[in-house]
Length: 90
Picture 1 (tube, rainbow, N blue to C red):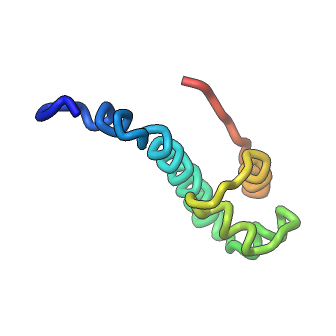
Picture 2 (cartoon, one colour; picture 1 turned 45 degrees about the vertical axis):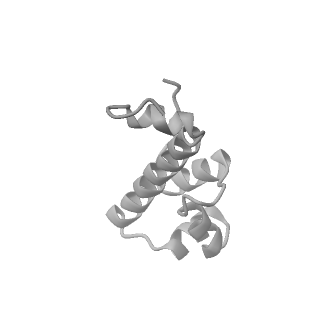
Picture 3 (cartoon, rainbow, N blue to C red; picture 1 turned 90 degrees about the vertical axis):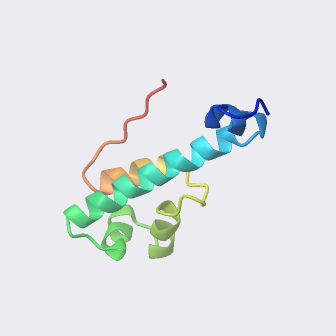
């Protein structure tokens, strides 16, 4: 550790926590966006599950940032909301 004034992200990298934290933050943002769109459209988890041809528990898992949801599942979720998933590298 470099001491006082060290950038927090540098500290996280030194502790090998940075990538994991970034991944969890990204998952939380995606889950929040899906949840917000569901609320905007007044759709329940059961309604989304029906549109996705899956179970309500699968929808719960997709909205859980701790769960390892595949990109294809997120894409199907977005499609069920009438949305398109967009991914970019930065």
